[in-house]
Image (cartoon, rainbow, N blue to C red; front, side):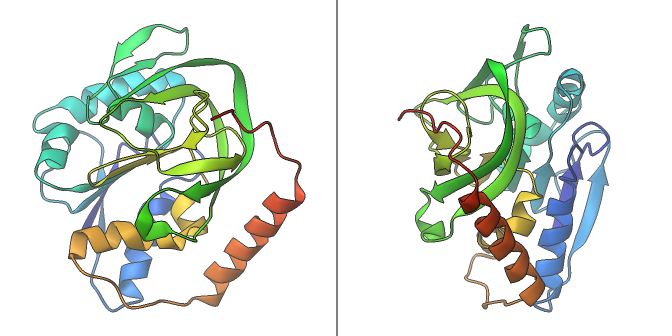
Length: 241
């Protein structure tokens, strides 16, 4: 399996490149070969999963220009590739997003979402209940740091319902977005290190069948610690549904 890490020089904030490393390692633990392809220019067509991370507001416009070069991310999505987009990566996959000065920019149009700027920055831990049936019972955790207010259109569905934290920040009480085989989220951590069920779901979309169970004590301990820490914190103004 080939895992594309897209523009880590622009979209590499908060260690999000670790998501590609998690995917590769979870395959290797199961005896499946995998490699990471670092993409610094035109997006190649020959990969199975494409990973985008968070980035500074000023880097988003350049990241869009790179990712739009033919065939571009839109082209690989149309042919059925799996995509994970975190924070700024989520925003640029949408129809439109706001720049650092509030200027409206055209996104890649892969996701039916629009992002404007919040008055206050959302910073802190998030706990969310998945709304994707395959993740039922696997609470999602992560760290958010953004000023985006991302509103989902009719062609997109939320990844999760926010229990504490801000999430998409649009007043819908949701976190992330799912459309076909594309997942967007505001969760850092990296999100796949803290939520192995989500990592395995992305991999299963590629291999086309359920993966055998995988228990790694260090991964389980990390998840348990973060869940305990989140539950000890006060609720941080969950948005109204």
